[in-house]
Length: 399
Ligand SMILES: Cc1cc2nc3c(=O)[nH]c(=O)nc-3n(C[C@H](O)[C@H](O)[C@H](O)COP(=O)(O)OP(=O)(O)OC[C@H]3O[C@@H](n4cnc5c(N)ncnc54)[C@H](O)[C@@H]3O)c2cc1C
View 1 (cartoon, helix red, strand yellow):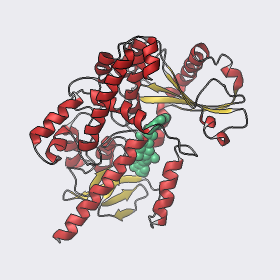
View 2 (tube, protein in one colour):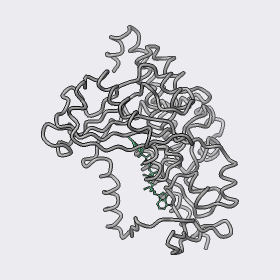
View 3 (tube, rainbow, N blue to C red):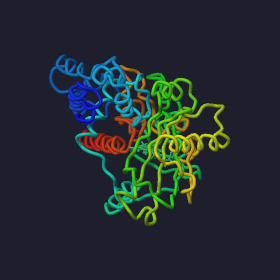
View 4 (cartoon, rainbow, N blue to C red):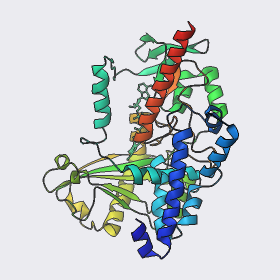
């Protein structure tokens, strides 16, 4: 990366090194104060830290609170096209780089250091493996159950109620339904009011996915490819400020058969195209919008990605719109990545995994600490389970 950037612009390699040094330091701090703990904000991180609070505060200054990711990137990477590439780390959490805190640059360090991994069988192989493992430990799964309400009595969880009327008594509930919807639709009452008063949450971006079966693969494509918009400012302005799909979007193009040949017939490709769009607004009717936006995406690839005969190669097609995502996963206004990380002081933090409002309620998933995306969501599950376990041990000792 350093050599490529240096070749584009003398001095850019050193700028990249400086940026990655800062990103690495931010990752260290994040690991120490924000990851693996049920924190719900910067004060929880400071109050929960061992040792001097002043020393903690001094260390936290290294995450450059009050600065945006876009500003930090451009300070060290002035080449606008290279900066646009680094901006896209913020897209992993569905947020605008100029509205998000600089600490999200730590994603650059995590990706470069730990690499990009592919579970054979695709992303779904991860929950399938977890389910198998949990089953071996005797966990009972009821995946068709539809939860209508989390029952709270005297400020404590006592169970859940299903839409078919069944009541399941429980000592604790871990909800990985969206954190805002957990409170507004499942919990309600005073706990909902306290949750909503604490902070205003904005949904992260949504997206359109085209799943294309191609009869012939494009040999120049890698497993992961980004085809960037001509102007990131214009693109992010559309998605995050105007709330309209970008007319010239960035397209993530995934060709999984390069890593797992079995996902496509010989010589063909199971192409996955993802374009970020705004979360759903009242006037968005994706049944009407999809045909035109599909064409915008295909035209972009025909124009900019050397895929001029793309439409002739398509033998299978399926799509997912913000409305489909909203209905299928019951997220916040179609948001793919929980709540947006907007706000250069508080944007990076999410609701705590241990509810401060209801005893026995724990939050996991993309809208809970530490945030969205598969790695963070897996961590959120670990944190919620750990917090529950600690509370149970404490209660047993006190009894
Ligand atoms: C199109 C798309 C592309 C993405 N790409 C990436 C990517 O490349 N990399 C990455 O890391 N992340 C990606 N993500 C994000 C990642 O998938 C999410 O962050 C993650 O799946 C969120 O996990 P979760 O447990 O919070 O929610 P979910 O996986 O949505 O699980 C919550 C489940 O709870 C169910 N549910 C909700 N309410 C109820 C109820 N009342 N009763 C019963 N069930 C209920 C929902 O139906 C859903 O099945 C993508 C997401 C989408 C939609």
